[in-house]
Amino acid sequence: MNIAKGGMSWIIVSYLVTFLFIIVSYFVSGQIKYVSLFASALLLVFSFTLVIFFRDPERKIGEGIVAVADGIIREITDEEDDDVGKCTKISTFMNIYNVHVNRMPLNGTIKDVVHYDGAHLPAFKKESERNERVILLLKIEIGTVKIIQIAGILARRIVPYVKKGDTVKKGEKLGLIRLGSRVDIYLPTKKIQTITVKVKDRVKAGEDTIAKIHD
Figure 1 (tube, rainbow, N blue to C red):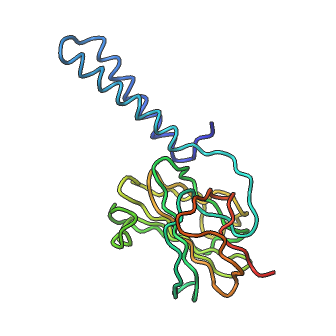
Figure 2 (figure 1 turned 90 degrees about the horizontal axis):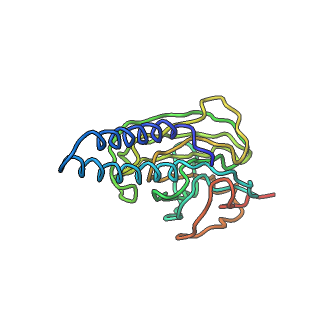
Figure 3 (figure 1 turned 180 degrees about the vertical axis):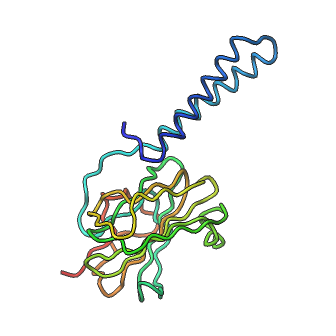
């Protein structure tokens, strides 16, 4: 199983702490021994869960504009954005069991990557706009596209894999959001032929088509 870059350190630390508690349980007795064994069991489950969280499977790249994140489409709205102009925003909410690696929607160049520190509120709330986030501006064949990676309650850090000036192919990895989170993509309306997803659809990053562009 491939592990996402930025996730292995969490897994190693978790297993090391688990191993430490197991060792301690062999050298103590009484109530402390039972507490140590119980903690070891919980940590072992947590460590295994982190492996699931940070898995990074290979993907067969889809057609058209592909999903940036794994998860559930929770919102599709028309917006007027300062960078993109008139656009369609598609929001994908990622649960803790989703793959947390985000991918490029089309071939293009990274115009800018900006990281903002912030809170860790539930990603589905309006107030989540104050959360930690990374804003990526992309120059692709349909013009400027914006992607916003937003941390949630459990997501403690966003790890970009790209930097300003990078040329990235469709489906290649943009970054990792550790644990649950949300990703918004802003697509220029006049360049979009059809939005191919609807609210409550489940999508996989790099694999599922979310929009078709004009020929």
